[in-house]
Amino acid sequence: MHPYRSHTCADLNKAHVGDNVRLAGWVHRVRDHGGVLFIDLRDHYGITQVLADSDSPAFKDLEKVRAEWVVSIDGRVKARDASLVNAKIPTGEIEVYAQGLRVLGEAGELPLPVFGEPDYPEETRLTYRFLDLRRDTLHKNMMLRSNVVRSIRNRMWNAGFNEFQTPIITASSPEGARDFLVPSRLHPGKFYALPQAPQQFKQLIMVAGFDRYFQIAPCFRDEDPRADRSPTDFYQLDVEMSFVEQEDVFAAVQPVIQGLFEEFGEGKTVDADWPRIAYKDSMLWYGSDKPDLRNPIKMQVVSEHFRGSGFAIFAKLLENEGTEIRAIPAPTGGSRKFCDRMNAFAQQQGLPGMGYIFWRKGDDGALSEDIQNALSSMLDVVPLLEEAARRPAFDQSKIAAARVLVDEAVSLCLNGLESAEAIAKASIEAKAAMLREAATAIDQGDLGRGKLLIAAVTSKLEAAGPLAKNIGPERTEAIRLQLGLGEGDAAFFLGGKPEQFEAVAGRARNEIGRELGLTDENSFRFAWIVDFPMYEKDPETGKIDFSHNP
Image (cartoon, rainbow, N blue to C red; front, side, top):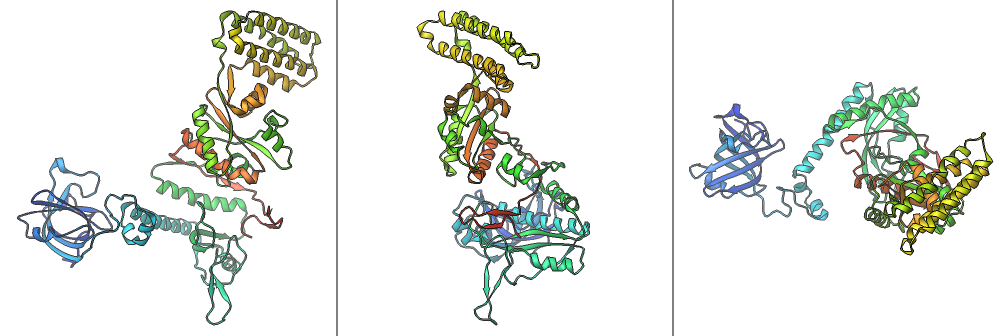
């Protein structure tokens, strides 16, 4: 028998019952049930339960064993009782009755427990990294990374690519971040640089005539810590191809990425349709050049609805060159509580907040029957106005008749109101004013505005929120129609120069999608972001620089 083990801790099953075996690994957990010891023995492959009672020759030695000791155990495989089978592990149908123990390494009190994976400060976890990596979650992550790298290599080799390694110690070249420098021993005062990417070396390979190159390459970049940046180094799939166009690159790379997610996506669906989205559209719609397309929300520019409006902050903002107002639709998000929560989220991201509007059912149902009938008679003007708007068959008499009908209906409504129905009075006067404006707009040939005013009057919805009060029903209805929203929906608004708020808008879009359950967490959806800008102007220095790596 092998001096350390005859099987791994994931090998044994019912077919081994009665066999004498030797296992080696770490003591994961010890349970003392009063004269009966149960030890979960763990190695790289899995866990096996070891049993010892007072009749076992190894019992007294096993009583001394503690968590994370490294041991080798001899024993006989037994079948578990049906009621004690653990279906969660491959060895759950058996256990090993211990007959001998060899301690390979003792462990003192642990600064970081491995079993159970309780939360611990990151500093402690990094100090005792070897213990942290024994935890099941990190162990699985390490194995996942290894398997992904192996799968990438196989897929690239099968696609006709060749793998070449490039030098790590090199000269500095312009890239997207600061270099890590290494002093030269042979040339005092001069420095090598660690490569931010194998850019020049892989180009040498292509010039030398190698047709398809790939490398899982280390990249060293001295960057400020951010959620989407590594502060020191990372690995990337680096690819070069000769005599190809953009479509050839897409055709080569897409099967690799899609296949990886199908293989390791744990059953989540992978959308085979990869849309092409222009960079400027991606930033406009999603606030990011790497959008989460599982979230259906698309942002839209709504500047015209706020230009010259009663909401002075946005109206004044739009007087500055290069500014705009952008809306983030939030289907089903139409509650003040949710809107306030998202406003607080924006403040956490460093903005003063987000304006919002939400739409709810109008309160006409609270009016008396007489008032509702009178209000209904006022809306009889709508067909006249709609007919008048059908140019070129424009009829001036229909406009005049519509104005008369509106005035008569308003008079009828207001004469029947009690003093307690002041809200109803305001609502009726507002609707009447919009109908008169609609008649004027149609008369002047502005059919779009006329139809919009009619839609605002006939809508059964009421816009609420601080913005709605300032910009009025005509503008809120125009926003609702543009965004395709309805009862129970909301919209959030951010304004300024796009580069100043786009990133936060993108994060807000993602947060809204998650909060409202709009994001499909059981799928992966990819896209090609195309037409990236080559250059951009630094807002502080005015200098023209590369938008991405040169």
